[in-house]
Length: 121
Image (cartoon, rainbow, N blue to C red):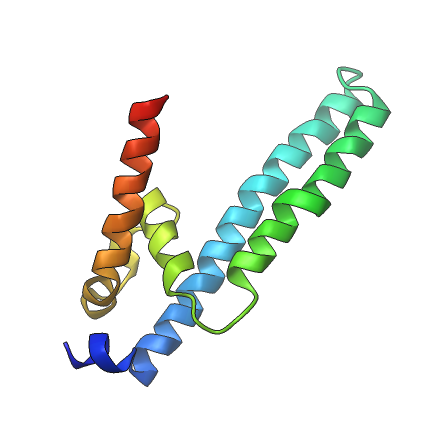
């Protein structure tokens, strides 16, 4: 548990960075799939071109920007990765046991927060 007091080891930092990139790509892909559905709806005549343009604008200004801020800025990705694990974007089997233990309290925080949000809706 020396890492908890002194921060992650070099190996954990490398794994964190790799998995953060994986989470970023997966979350971005999900958002792009929604946009692709909009393009298909437009192509099939089910969506107005101006609504599609608005969807592209919203993707750029909101979804893509938010994901960029979460995953591509700074060099401490503990929170982003813990959230991705809590939400299931990254599977626990994809993460070393050492990193799961290191992130354990943060993952549990996000899981409890998600449960609280679900209970309120």
